[in-house]
Amino acid sequence: MSRALDLLGGRLKLRHLVLVTAIADQGSVLRAAEHLHLAQPAATRGLREVEQILGVELFTRGPRGVTPTVFGEAFIDHARAVQAELRRAGDRITGLANGETGTVTVGTLLAATNVLLPRSIAALKAERPGITVIVREGTFDSLVPRLVDGDTDLVLGRLNPIDDRTGLRQIPLYDEPILLVARDGHPASGASVLSELLAYPWILPLEQTALRHELEQVFRAQDLPMPGNRVECTSILTVRSLLLQTDMVAALPALLVRADPQLVRLPVPLASVKRSVGVTLPESRALTPAAKVMLHHLRTQSETLSL
Image (cartoon, rainbow, N blue to C red; front, side):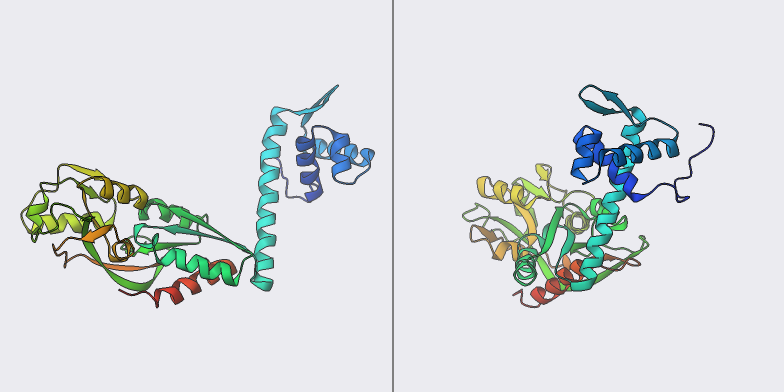
C-alpha cells in the first residue's frame, strides 16, 4: 500500500462501520446480520465492499466464525471511535432541543468537594434527572488539560491564576477564608502563633497548588521553616481521616471545617491567605446544555452559602 487511503471520498459509508463493529462483536457474519436485521447476503456483500475499499482483509474466516486480522483490529478501533463521536453529537443535539438529557463532567478541587458541589448536584438532579453528572477530583494543573481538550466541561474550586494559560476564563462564585484545623481535643487547641504548631505533623497541599504556595509565603514571612514532618495530600477523605486519627494539623477551607463537628479551628490566624472559589471554563468552546444547567445551579447554590 504505497499511499494513504482516502476514506472521505464517499465510498465508505456509516453502515459499513456499523456492520464491521457488529461482526466483531457478534463473532460471525450471520449473527451480525441477525443483530442488524439484515439478510446474510447483504451483510456479506457489505463486508466485501469495505475490504475492497481498504484493500485488505478485515477478518479471517473459521469454522466457529470470524476473527479480526491486524488490519481489522485497527479499523474496528477507529470505527468504534467514529460511532462514539456520532452518538455524542446526537446527545448534544438532543440536549440542545430539550435540555433534559446529556452529560456534564465537572473537575473539582478540594475547596468544592464538601458543600457547594454536592448541593448543586442534588439541585440539578431534582430538576433534571436525565442529566448524568461525572465528577473528577484532582489538582488544577491536572484538570486543566482535560478542560482544554474537551474531556471536562468545567473546573470548580479555588481560582488559580490563568494569566499564562490561553483559552480559559473564570467566574468567581464566593470568597472563603482558609483555617488551620485539627481534631476536637487536639493538644494544640490553645495555640495562638504559628511557631507553636511546628511541633506537630502537618498535612499540606501538593506543591503545584496555589494554596501550598501561599502557605509557604506565610511561613517565610514569619521566618519559620516549612514543617518537616508532613504529608502532602489533596484528597479530603484522606485528610479528614488523618486529622481525626492523629495530632496532625491542616489548612482547610472554612466550609469544610464548619460542616464537620469533629474538626475544630485552631486560633492561629491565616489572614494573608485569601481564597476565591469559582468556575474555570474554556474561553472559546460553548458549554453544552447540561453544563449550562450545572453552572446555573453552582451559581444559585453559592449564593446560599453561609461564610
